[in-house]
Amino acid sequence: MSIKFKNANVLNKDFEILKSKDLIVENNRIKTIRPTDASDDSNYDRVIDCNDNYLIPGIKNSHTHNAMVFLRSLSDDLPLHDWLKTYCFPNEAKLTDEDIYYFTTLGIMENLTSGVTGSMDMYKSNYTVAEASYKAGFRVNICDSITQFDKVIAPEEFYDKINNYKGDNGNIVKYTFGLHAEYTNNEEIMKMLSELTHKYKAEFYVHNSETKFEFDECKKRWDGLTPTQVFEKFGLYDFGGGGYHCVHIDDNDIEIFKKRNLTLVTCPGSNVKLASGIPRIKKFLDSGIKIAIGTDGPASNNAIDMFREMYLTTTLQKVTNNDPSALNPKEILKMVMVNGANCIGHKDADSLEEGKLADLVLIDVNKPNMQPRNSFINNLVYACGKQNVKLTMVDGKILYEDGKFFINEDENYIYKKCNELLHNLLNR
Ligand SMILES: [Zn+2]
Image 1 (cartoon, rainbow, N blue to C red):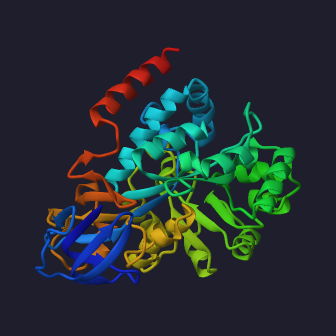
Image 2: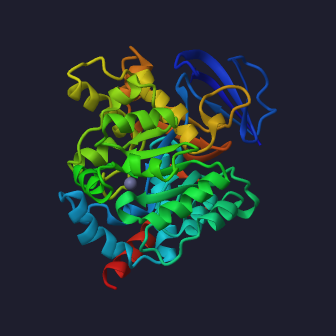
């Protein structure tokens, strides 16, 4: 399969614009990027005239719980721990694999409308999430969410089987060792998982210091140690990985992040809606620590919209640092494109270059919110939205174009099915 994108402006690895290019995709990789010419188009399976619009690397959603779409707008405006105990956990306990399959698919569709080509998804029923993502052709790195309350804890089996799901060999579907959080796990589980991260020299991700309550309670339980320090104590971070949220962090934690080359995955939409706080992103960046961005679950956010997350990530740091120059657009794009590619385990999906994976997005600037054309980069972070996502390609395949989905499922059937399943679940 070969696709020619002609007459495009291409965002390169240095976040500069290469004007008037043709970008050729062959199978799942970028074959070449060259000046637009009027050469014969008949050699390609499809030619897409970009009409002077912009091709950008795929955006990566580095922390989500895609299936949590089912809880969206069911209960809002509660503190995290009340919301979890009252609405989230009781309804999640009723979920079937069929529910999770369709809710995950709906979440994937929402990601695609936001120019997202891959996500780090943490949820229950890992094989079901793998199947929904694999069928859609949407890259996912499934981060395990082990808790001490789980009936089945099988990280090594997941590591073996999901990293080679149906012979995929980790191309569309991957698995990463992870815990739900410190407060949902005991010492025995942390030791068991640490043995596995050492055995496979593997990364480890976890919800880390999302709320002040979590941070303070952890210190009480662990003789003054913070969640980051507890994970470090058990050697869970010895081979890298990262933490989701990291809103409440002390300076010793920052040193651990630096020493272990960890990534902080910030989820600003969720943090502000739940009043969890604002992480010290600027401080982490100044310490040389990688930052990536995620939406968190669409129940605590309430949207899977990475444009909103990019905007919030930069503007919240401007406010908290009292500095409008804190976090410029290029730094934000690096977080969602380069660092995000690292999080999802596909380093060669980080930029548009010859030989890289064909994970890309066509941004339509012929809309009022992207005019006039003063600065594409600034518009992309400060003004762009889902209405500008004309096409999302993953692994050389177009999964979303002009509002239509090509994910091996009918979109209207997905909406109908999800509403039926939700109705049944709430009445169980
Ligand atoms: Zn989360």
